[in-house]
Image 1 (tube, helix red, strand yellow):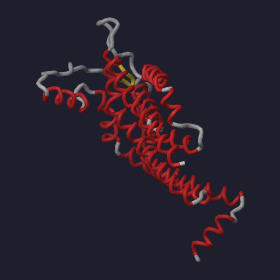
Image 2: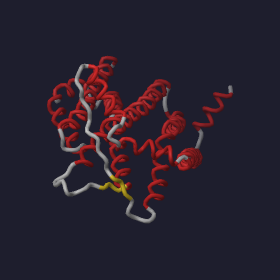
Image 3: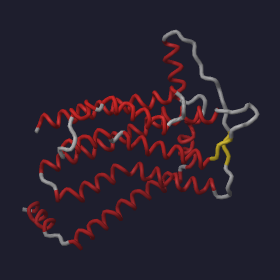
Image 4: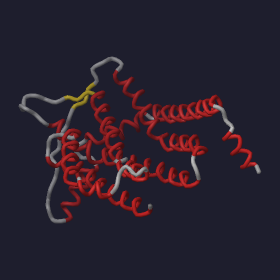
Length: 267
């Protein structure tokens, strides 16, 4: 009986009532986001130790590659390098600390934000749509997390190593500003998080009948060229990084074909 009354109340909500629910939801989201941002701001040393780790020549990715190659009998070692980082404006370090805390707070609060959005939209969905929406929300977050991890452990360290050590002349020393470092890191993180949403987008479009597996198979070669072009734009101009980015993006495309094929077969 209580559930029936609750459902009737949700159905009878006026436009103003929906706005009030949305306002409360928005307040909760902002509160949780800034709570996480405040905690991150307080742990400054740990936060920037984590964020600045990919710039080091002995980062875990490089050590892992060395260990794998040495397992196969290849005595390979990456050349050590040191890139000096500077801060040019008086308030640059404080503002970078503040903006980074907010960005990471939003990132950590994203599961809760997805849950709040799901709670807000669920009254308008039928039973089948509710089940699908849960899977879509979970998939979106997991895929975004995979994109973030790929950028942190692979794309950004390789990009920083290449661009930071590249010299047109040995007499010119590279110094990187902290703001430039954080901006590049944040941009690549966001881009890779979005790129990894391709399977979810393909699922939604297939459900709507806009996309099908035959279309994706037919334009597979075209998609490969587009992936290579996009990878070349968002990564440094070297073949190794291009391969590291293009391979998972193409695998995502193949996953999209499998997903759309399954959706089509169920119709």
